[in-house]
Length: 144
Image 1 (cartoon, rainbow, N blue to C red):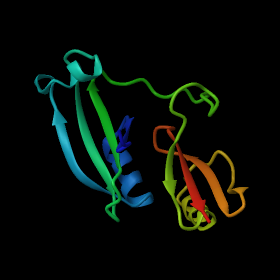
Image 2: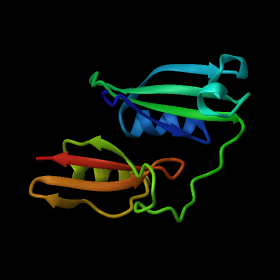
Image 3: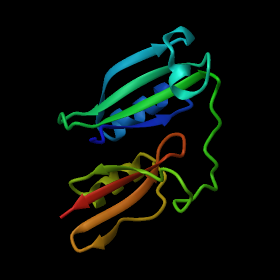
Image 4: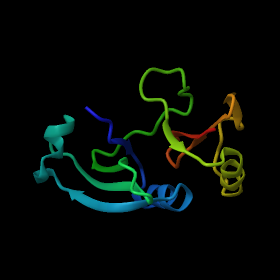
C-alpha cells in the first residue's frame, strides 16, 4: 500500500480552501457534494451525515492529495487548543519547502500562527510547525 492523501475536517470550506491554495500553493482538483443518500455515513460511521468535500493537489502534479471535509450534519467539534504534538493520533501534515526560513517569513507576514521558529533539526534539514485555519498543525520541511 502507498500513502496517497490526508483528510482534514474543517469548519469553513471556503476559508480552508483559500488557505491551502493561496498560502500553501495547492490547487482544487474537484469538489464533491455528499448528501446523506450518497452513502458517506456508511463509510465514516455517521449514518445520514452530509458533507462537502474538496480534493486539493500540488501544482507540480506530485502524487498526493489533501482532502478537506466540511460536515454539514453533524457539525464537527473544534480541535482542543490545548492539544499538543505529544498527544496520541495524527500530529501534523508535512509540506516540503525549498526554503523554510523564507516561507516562514512569508507566512508570518500573512499572520499564520507558528508553534515555534525554524530549526536546523539535522545538518541541512530545516523544520517549522504552524497552524492551519482550524488549528490543525502543519509542518514545513526543507531537506538539504
